[in-house]
Amino acid sequence: PNAKFTRTFVFPQPQQLDDGKENILMGSDRIFGFSTCVGKANVSSTVARKLSMGSSVPQTEPRGLLGTKHVQETERLETVSERDGTHGSQILVFVRLRPMAKKEKDAGARCCVKIVNRTDVYLTEFANENDYLRLKRLRGRHFSFDASFPDSSSQLEVYSTTTAELVEGVLQGRNGSVFCYGATGAGKTYTMLGTIENPGVMVLAIKDLFTKIRQRSCDGNHVVHLSYLEVYNETVRDLLSPGRPLVLREDKQGIVAAGLTQYRAYSTDEVMALLQRGNQNRTTEPTRANETSSRSHAILQVVVEYRVKDASMNVINKVGKLSLIDLAGSERALATDQRTLRSLEGANINRSLLALSSCINALVEGKRHIPYRNSKLTQLLKDSLGGSCNTVMIANISPSNLSFGETQNTLHWADRTKEIRTKAPEPN
Ligand code: ADP
Ligand code: MG
Image 1 (cartoon, rainbow, N blue to C red):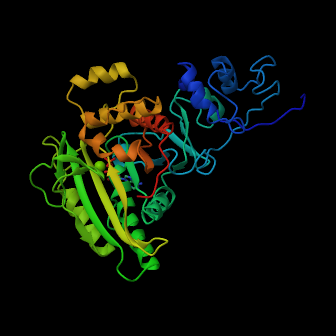
Image 2 (image 1 turned 45 degrees about the vertical axis):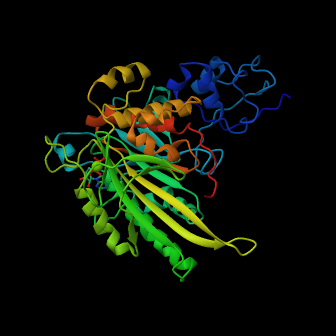
Image 3 (image 1 turned 30 degrees about the vertical axis):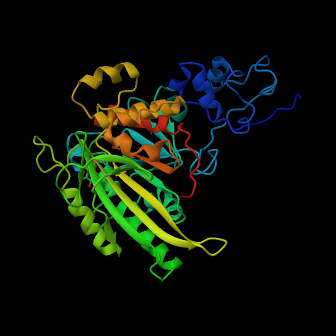
């Protein structure tokens, strides 16, 4: 009983400790080695706070739990395999830092983001940038994700780490979705769509999908359909054949946009051109000519249908759906607390993103009612957020200190999204 144990311990973010019990539970999920015995009732916020501040557990509490053993706090990397449950039991959250833009350099911007150990993101503005221990104790300055991509990361690296596994899942009939989240100019469209020279996740996923299908069968068994739509100002539009707004309906497959073009895809080559054309159909705001609107969400859905034989040699049809989502700019739209959220609701800001933040909050808090119906985007994402689906979030951030507030806000939401527990995906 007197033995000293060295435990690795990932402590909750300081701001999560401030409002009591619930956050302790959230924190306890991340205490490796204790996750089965630490419960809400057992750890006082003081203990957790002390742990997070780097002191050892007091001898007297919490008895029978951490025992009277000292816990040596050791920095621990949270990686994909170490977070409890793999794909499906929670949303995997990644961060991608983009390179500093020329415009930012010209404006005298300094870099205020450091990515360390492939997982940890530090906001170094106004601090000694190598003093990571101190930054950890400051509110909202240190975050840890399933993986964090520095500005040197390639499109392929981002694709392989975040999405390749989901593509494999789709071929086994499991739905997956990936959404890019972040302020305007943070790199969402670059990550999702990319350029001809550096194609992004959407294109690489389809390429990979065709390669995997070819490896699996050459009998034309798999049929791939693409659809590409936009949610702008609470109207849903078809990006592949623009026209009248589409109506959302619920059917046995979930929420569908009635009349949406299903483009039958045969090869990768045509897809990039198709997507770029689709992107040109995205709504641009009158005041920002030439710029794709910062308030439009684009959703690419890739549906794979194929036939398999079951044990008694009956042919059954299977479907897997991959949704790739380039969200509208998150600036101003996501308030970090409910009060600001409500006051913003009256203002003319992106209703779909507000609804998304409400849904994330409700899912994190384990509420029974999740307000998906509040917006078109959340209706469309219903089976991607809380439903039975492999879900990945890529939070895009700029390195510039001029975007510090937006970056911090993005990281806050990304951090919160990590706490959502989804149902394990079942094959369709
Ligand atoms: P968003 O869609 O979030 O508004 P964009 O993807 O359009 O932002 O990115 C803004 C600018 O930064 C674009 O010119 C884009 O080409 C560039 N950019 C973004 N991410 C990267 C990256 N990882 N590497 C190189 N350039 C990037
Ligand atoms: Mg964009």
